[in-house]
Structure formats: C-alpha cells, structure tokens
Length: 583
Image: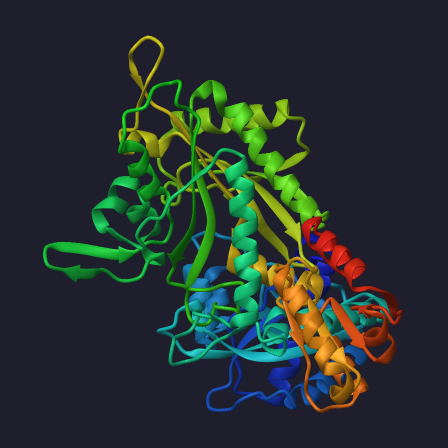
C-alpha cells in the first residue's frame, strides 16, 4: 500500500481533499468549527467540532454527496497571503484556528486557501481546482481529543482517501478490504488467540490457550537460538526504584511514559518500561577481565508503558509487553564482530519466518533536540561514527534517519513492511557509550587498568506482542505448522466405526509431541472439514474404512483440496520433518 505522505503528488491531492471535506461539512453544518486536516500515510483526516451534533457512519453519504457537488462545480482554489492580524480577523469565529494562529511565531508567513464560499487556514500547496478531486472516498469517523490531550474536548475525526484516477482508488479500496481481513484483532478473536476486557484494563490483552501456545513456541525458539549464540538468560524484577531510572537517565527522558510512582515504606517504585538498567547492575555484580568479554545477557522480560487509552491497539500497542531483550557488554575492538553477529542472527530469524520485505535504517539523533537526547556531543559523535563505520565495513545497505535514535545512542533499526502496508520497526541493535558511564561499569584490561565496556542493546523479535500481531497479519492466522496451536485435526468419518482408530492415531501423534485434536463430535464430515479450515489447522486427517482396515491415514493440507493417503508411519515422519525444519 502506498504511503500517501511520502508521495508529493498524492500528498497535495489528499490535503486538498481534506479541505473539500471541510467545505462540504460547513455547508451541511454551518456551526462547524475545524481544528486540523493533515495528510497521513493512509490518506487524510479532518478534526471537526459540531457542538452537540454527531456525525455517524450513515452521515458520510450525505457529506460525500455534497463534496461531489462542489467537485462538479469546478471551483478554483486560490491562495491568500495574510498578516497575523488579518488572519486573526478572518478566523475570529473559529477558536481552533485562532489558537493555531496565536501559536505561530511573530513574522511567520501566513496563508489561507479559498474555494468559492469556504476559506481555510493552510500552508498549502493545493490543486488548482476542485474538479481534480473527483476520485475520493470517505472511510470512517471516530473521536479524537483536541490536541491529543485526554483532558480536552473530543472532536469528530473523519477519514478519507483521494487518488488521481478511479482505477487507483478502487485498487486502494481493495487493499483496505484485504487489510480488514488480515486485521490481527479480528483474527485474534476468530481464532481465539487473545482477548481484552475492560475489567482488566485498556492495553492489557490476555493470551488465550491457542495464543499462549504460539507465544510459548516463539519464546522457546528465540531462547534456544540465543543460547547457541552464547547468551546467558536471566530474570529480573518488573519493578525498579525511581533512583535506578534517575541514574540511567530514563527518568529525565522517559518518565511521562512510565506508570505512576508507588510509595512503599521509604522507597519509590515504578513498573519498569525497559530492562537495560537491571542488566547494567547484573554486569556490575562481578569484577570482569577483558578476557571475559563479550558478555551477552538476555531476558524475555515484561515491561510496562503508560500508553494513552486511545492509542492502545490489540497486540500492536499495549501497556504491558514482553520484550525479546538482550545487552552485550563488549570491548571497543569487539563492536564490529558483535554487531555483525546480531545482524546475522536477525537474518537467520527472518529466514525462518520467511520475512523478505525489510530495510536497514541507521537511526541518529537530532542535534537540535536537547530534551529528547542526552546532551553530550562528544559521546554522540563517537557513537554515531562507530556504528556507521561498522555498518559500512559489513557492507550493509542502509539509509539514515535523523531524530529516530534512542536517547542514549544511535541504533540500527530493521524496518519491516507489513502485509497491510505498515512500516514497522521489528528488530533493533543500539550502540551505547552512556549507560556504562552512568553506572560506572568497568573491566580490567590487559594492562591491569579499569576501563569502560561498550553496551550493545538489541532485540530480535522486538516484543512478542507486536511480533505476534505482525505474524497474524502476515499469515492471515494460518501459522506455519511448527507454530500452529493445533497442528493436526483428526476427523473420523463415522464415530461408530472409525473413532477407535482415530483415538489410536491421536495417541501416536500425542506421544510424539504433536499438537493434535480428535474431532469426535456427532457431526457430518463436510461440517467438520469446514470447521478445520475455518480454524486454519495445517493438517486434517480423514479416517474411514480404507484407512482403518489398512493402517493408513488420508491427509489434506490447509489451503489445498488434494487428499493424500499414506501409512501412519509415513505421515508421522512427514509431520515431524515439517515441524523440525520449519517448513
């Protein structure tokens, strides 16, 4: 799916269509007042205040009809240059526009755009005429807090999309339908993978048995891979003192994203948002020689971040997550080799999951942003130079992104294009010279001197929650056999004659650690087969007279209509090979 914001022509078209939407709304609701109508990756939206009136989904048809009338009337769109006083006078009836104007610095160039009887504050640019906006679609309406602040009024946000041709619009709408079918929230409910409940709280999904099986397999998979790479896994508390995060620097840069302080006795504790401070203390627990390094500490760790309730989304954005986290304590001369090993581990994992649509991003700080990033130019220059040099020596094809670094150092992010077109950061590898300094971490070098190690922060699967959301949407919930909650569904044709044989096959597979289900319901074969397909079980075994009498099984793979008959021993070999080799 095209990122509208990254395409100049489509960006202009969609922003102009946002004004067309506002124009039509003003005709239908003369009391309407408007906040902002930006272009987003998926099209555009406009935030609108209608007082007590509410725009429902069915009202979008009337707004669409009015927009089409304005398009047909072919109104020229004219740019107007304004002084600040002129702008304040022009929009004196709209407090939202007045607020925007008052926030503008003195002397800033102010423009508005006029189309017939509607004028809107805007930097532009716009198309020349409303007739260029004929291929649009209003998609949905929702609520949005004014300025994104939960303490402010809820405005009505209308979303839409606009393309130059009807063919491009239709193609986009097809992709949107595909995205709905792949939505991990929808599939998570249908396949009974996870659920949410208001009594538990927003952003706190509960993993149901099916989802728990998949998550357990993911955890075992990545833990075993890391152990083979020399990682030592630990468990650390989900709480930490505020002092811990003040030393690390997270308190100054991250406290607004933490849950509130819990005061107990003489301590102030918080739910941890990340694991690195705990791992720094694990390293500091012992004296280390240069011969001990690298030391690789891994943890599958629950973390907590205070996401706004309106921002949480299924498994993709949650308040409690489980990170596939690790911290590597290395000598400066080991940075290149260790970063290379992290990259190779990432690529090995992507091969297992058939992830091919990705790119490497070198995420750097914005030197002008002294609040977001720790203020130490010398440290930053060294860290960015080191990481860039390593990536160049590894011949990695990457692009740079200013303002995307962690507060303590630059990072290599792996950007994945999801099945529904989202650009998602999945894996990350970060270089850190700051935390070793703040926690006074040392090792004894070959000269007997205490020197600082360098820390590499890295996550391969990111969080299991977000990776699961990505995986559900990528596979449409049809997990590869090794991950599937149920790997084989046994369906006796007739319980009276075939259930006993089905039980024998069930026990055989169960004894070989295959996740198997025996469908012994008194239902017709066709119904059971449809149910198996609906639940996206990789293998369905159909057992009738021939299978029972000759010790055979007939299987059908999910997504095919072919039925294959083999001995039960041959099937056991097939299913075990499929699982072991992650086919």
